[in-house]
Length: 105
View 1 (tube, one colour):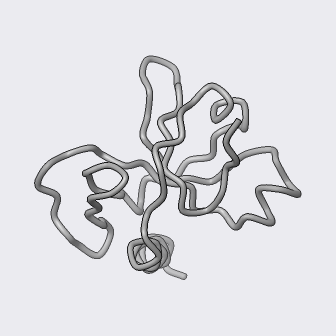
View 2 (cartoon, rainbow, N blue to C red; view 1 turned 180 degrees about the vertical axis):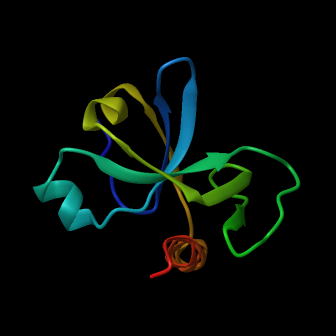
C-alpha cells in the first residue's frame, strides 16, 4: 500500500467515475487526523491555461490543477485508488499560492 502524502497525485474512485487528485493537506495532519484527506482536482487536458486559480502540470499527469475545486476524500478511497506520482516542489508552491488566492488567505 502506498503512503498518502502532500504533493502526491492519485486516481481515486468516486461515485460514477474515478477522479485525479492532488493531495494538499499537511503530512502531519494526514497522519494524526485521518478522517478526510484534503485534495484539489486535476483535469487531465492537453492545453491548460495558467491563471490565478489554475496551475498547469506535466508530471505525473498532463493537466491543470483546479485550486478552487477543493474536496476531502476518505482514506479508504486511496486504499482503492492508484498512486500516479508526485508533483515537483515548484509546482506544489504554485498550487499553494493558487489555493491561498482561492480561499482569500
